[in-house]
Amino acid sequence: MKFIFKEIKIFALQLFLILFLPAVLYAQDLNEVFAIGEKNFASGKYLEAEKYFSEVLEKDPDNYKVLRAQADTKIKLKKFKEAEELLNRILAMPESRGRNILVFEKGSAEGRKAELVDETVMVLDESSEVDEDISQFVKDDAIGPVPHFRVYILSSGKMELLLKSKYKIKYHGIPTATRELVSALKSSVQKMAISMNQEKPEEEMVLIEEGCFQMGSDSGNSDERPVHKVCLSSFKIGKYEVRQKYFQNVMGYNLSQFPGADLPVESVAWEHARDYCKKQGYRLPTEAEWEYAARGGTKTEYYWGNEITGEVANFCDSECDLNSRDASITDGFRHTSPVGSFPPNPFGLFDMAGNVSEWVFDWMPVDENYYLMSPEKDPRGPRPELDACSGVKCVGSFSITQKINRGGSWNKKVSEMRSANRMNSHFQLQPDGTGFRCAVSIK
View (cartoon, rainbow, N blue to C red):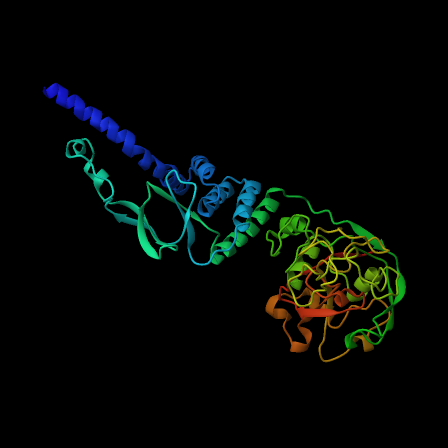
């Protein structure tokens, strides 16, 4: 009789395990497995973590927390392209307000809209009753407090505790703060990818033969006048704006807001531009050299003529978020474009208008008009000796702390791309959308 009773108990235990364990395993599939992945990641076992996170994503592909964890893992494994793809999946999700979620009961395809109040609350599961005879086969801690979600159900207006082994939650969109963090991480990943493919800088230089031209404009801003004759010795200038892959290789850092190996380096200070060119055996072009090269022998407002279309340069067009945009024209790029994306000027130079504005050698005095006193032959701007200084040593009076940049950029209005247009910023600031190209004298 005792034998029969024992067999009944064993059968009851088996039945209990069949009915109860699937619910437990359901939680393991989404939460326990994720936790194992996190533990492996923390221990530096990134290949193991990658495997567990992949398993979770197969069942819950839109869980942004798991996507982020897997992206972090891919970064550790130097799989930057895969990491970027995962981050893009997160950034493609709608932005949520608060902690909006969908709640799914095991086996149900329809979710209830709710707000997540607490992700984990440890309480007794009062919904399950275990037979007294069966309980002797179950460890004491198995019937203790178990993890629940605390959620506010929108349809009923009530707070509920949901057993994690029987429910899963799906985030409906991502919080604003998360989006910002993921966007910043994506930028870092893109720069890491550039570092992985080190490419020796090969700045293509174009020979500009000596010649004279009329510098400035009578129809532009006051600092573009008077128009005056300038004659220049032969020099060479970069065919393209300096690419990020070259800058990052030489300088060991990349300050660009829009990372990309063949995108122009931008958001750099004048000192950064000067130092890069110097390391390459070059220098920044003088303002006169830059305008002469930009015009390419033309006398029109822009080197292609006087009219603007979306086929000539990258500027603040209809896709631009700024107030300076021209809503009637689209150039095909929301931000910067790969160097050389638009036709070259008559001298064979690319992006001398738009994409990024370009630092030049010259200072811009704010209390005098250098054009009135500029020499005709090879002008170098006021106080050229300060080109060799660095940091606070450069700072004199306010009138001589501004450096000139030229050409307009993706975030500037159309008129700032005019060949004669002049802009300036403090030499130590890193203006948005400002890059450079190098030049060299012909000995």
